[in-house]
Image 1 (cartoon, rainbow, N blue to C red):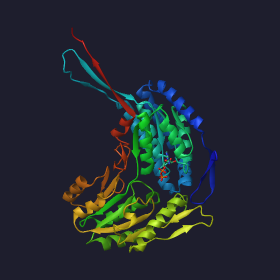
Image 2: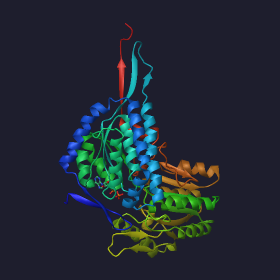
Image 3: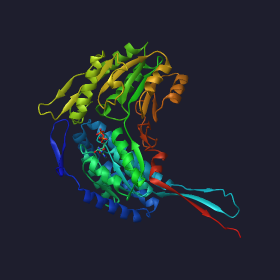
Image 4: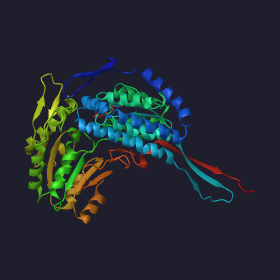
Length: 465
Ligand code: ADP
């Protein structure tokens, strides 16, 4: 295998950079340095770590436009979305800079006179992270910030499609004064770097965001060294639109959750389940708005939807649309494509499909593209059954103004993240993560630092003779 790879702009096919893959030896050396650095980093006081994280966040903000432009070039998303992602990425650093100062332990009342029982929190050790291409900045900081705040050292392997943002963020961390062996970035094939990470007893924690099959393989591979794992995996988000819903609001929010990042997010709406009495109005309005979305290069100011990341993604999306249409789905918008002659750039026009049934693949497989399939329900329990009929359990959305329906749906949907009249529920201060095969653990919020901590308990005896 070549020891370099190129990073390409998915909107133009232009080569942006050639990156050297680190050898296994180099990665093992980086793990050794990260492990050694842990011995001193864990002793820095929480306020000092907090200040360094603040400085890192400020430097990223200072270079926001440059980072966002790099992100748009390597990922394809519209520049406004990349700018939004830089803000989202620093919001994790800001949140965990504060949480570093709140890693409280506790004192437990003793069961024996004269004893004192103390519980305290300690950093787990060297953390290895593997991140995806769809949010190259935020998926890195959502892991790095709590790890560093906890007193762990950190090493990240970004996706080969989008390493440039992560490399730049790592440089800025060093510029902020975080030691070079406390936060490191290595590059290479996921399978190879992943094996070095999972095989190494020096790595105490593996945190991964990506597909469910790769997540399962990493969980298995982590067993031999009994590594702690956090997994943020695939999703297949349902959107339930109840018969009393505010249709315009539901349409507006569905557009946000469906077409952001060209539908390439793990919390993207994937199955739209609409009450039969309003499906015509909802679908027509959704299609009208969808047709107004401008598809193009993310650097053009007017662009709403960029290219999809690569040929593999494109083929999967087209296959799902064709499968649905062959089985009877109607196309209200999209199902059109634009591929350049060199087969390097792949654009899928935002697509609305109606009359979608359970027999179609799109109802069972994550699409990761700008396609909204609409199906119907008559009784609420039927909608819940359709929504839960998947091994995934990451995000779900519903629209209703009836508090009884809302609470019933919240209680019965097997999902870790739920938006009620809200297509954009994610934030640094909330726990993000999935149930079932969508993952293990949570990132963000007070929960998001726990995976980087060990709990130690001290029992002091004989305080009184
Ligand atoms: P996607 O389908 O979104 O590309 P992947 O799970 O394939 O999702 O990729 C997410 C991240 O996992 C990327 O950094 C990729 O390089 C890495 N990766 C891919 N395959 C493996 C593997 N077998 N072991 C470890 N990491 C992997």
